[in-house]
Image: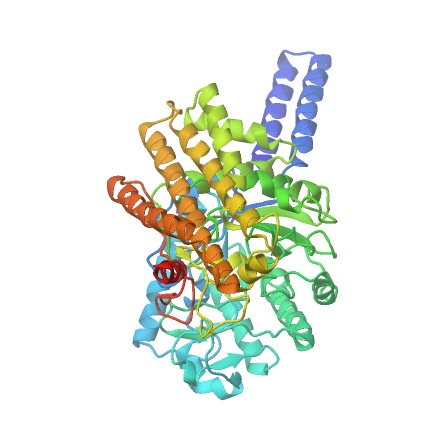
Length: 624
C-alpha cells in the first residue's frame, strides 16, 4: 500500500515548482534569479528536514475495549480524526489473528460451513471495511495481536503436541480443564505461528504490521479460539523469547517488509528488569522494521512506579506506551492530567536515579515513538460519555511526539484554544488540570509510606478485608491490610489522614475553579463542572472511609476506639454516597459510579462483598 506523507508531498511540490521556474526561465527570466529561487527553496527544504528531526517516526494510538463488552464508542476509532491530529498509525483491537482459516497450514482444518469458519469469515469481512477506512485516511495500521491463539479445531486435532496440560488458566477461552498451554519450543507451535503470520498478511495485504501481545491473553470476545502466551518467565523464558522473536522477525520484518512491534509487557520480568531485557534483545539482530514497545512505568500504569529502566538501553528501536484513560485513577470520570508528568516526570519520582521522563529520553537514539492508549485498559467502569480528560492527555502527548522541541505549556495552550476558551478561562482550566495531578496522588497514595496501589482500580474501591479472605497474597488487589497495619504500628494514622484531608481540599478548589469557567461550548462547561464534582465526592468518600478503617484498626490494637470520630466519619461517608448517586442521576454526562468492593478477578462480577463498604460498616456496628 502506498500512502503519501508530508515529506513526499513537499518533494513533489518542490520538483514541480522547479520545473515551472526552469521552463519559464527559457523564455522570460534570467539565470541569476532562478539561482536565487532555487536557494530559497533549498533553504525551505533544509528547514523542513530540520523540523523533521524533532518528529518521532511513530505516533500511534489505540482504543482498547473491555474484555467481553461492546466495543468502546470513541472519536479515536475514526481514522480521519486520528489523521487530523497528526497521528501516523492506529493499533486496533480487531482480533485479526482470529480472522484467518489456516488453510495454508492444512486445508479445511476449520471445516467449511461450520459455525467456527463462518465466525472467522465474518470477522475478516468486518476487518476489510475497517482497513479500507484507514487506507482512505492514509493512516498506517498495526493490528493488536495475541500470540499464540488458534481456532479450537486446531487444538482439538493437535492439542497434545502443542503444549502441556494446564488448568485454571487466567484469560483462556473455552473449557479450561482441557486446554493446553502453548510453548514456542514445541515444533508445531512454531509452524502454526509462521502459518498465522502468512495467513494474516495474505488475507489483509494492506496491513502495515503487527503489535504483538504475549503477556496477557483474553478471549472473551473470540468464542471459537483458544490459546495463551507461548513463552515462560525465568531462565527458560529467555530462550523462549529469543526463538519467538526470531520467528516473528523473519516472517514479518524480513520476508514481508512489514513492521513488528514487540511488547515487553509481562508481570515484572522482561518488561522491568534491564538485565533480562538485554539478555533477550542482545541475541536478536536489529532490523529497521523491528521495534520494542514498553510502558513508561516500571510495571503497570500506576502512580509511584518509577520510569521504566529498560527504556533507552540496548541496541533496538523502542516506542513508549502511555495510558490516557488511567484505569487506576478514575478512567476519565474526573480530571486526571498525567501528560505533563509523563513528559517531564511525576513529582513523586524526582529523586529516582537515571531517566525520569520522556524529556530525559528524547535524545536517546533508541527512542522512536509514543503510543497513546487514548481509551481503555483494565476492566469495567467507570464508563464515560465525554472524553475530555482522556482527550487532553492524548492531545498533549501526541503533539509533543510530533515535535519534541515544543514545551508542554505551549501544547496545553493550543488545546485550550481548540476548546474555544478565553485567556482567563484557559489559565483556570490549566490550574484544574495541574491540581488534579496532585489531588489524585494524595487521594489514592501517600508521600509518607508505600500504599498498595491496587486497592482502588477501575470501578472498585477496596479496603480492609477479613483475615480468612485469602484468595490473593498480601499485595492483593483490593486490600489495604498490610499497609494499614504498618501505618498503625508506626503511629502514622493522623499523618496519613492529613494527606487525605489535603486531597479533599485540592478537590474542593478544583470544583470551585470549574464553576468559574464561562467560555467554551455548553457541553464542555457542563462536563467540566460535573466531572470536577465527581472527583471531589469520590476523594471525600475515600477520606471518610479511611478515617473509619484506620481509627477502627487502631482501636483493635489499643482497645480504645475513637467512637465519636468513627461515627461522624461513617455518617458523612453514607451522605457522600447519596450525593454521588444524585450527581449521577441528575447529570446526563456524569460517569457511572464506583462500587465499594475490592477488585477480585476470581469472581465473575470481579468482586465479592469484601472491600470498603464491609470494612466501614464493620467498625460502625462495632462502636454502636
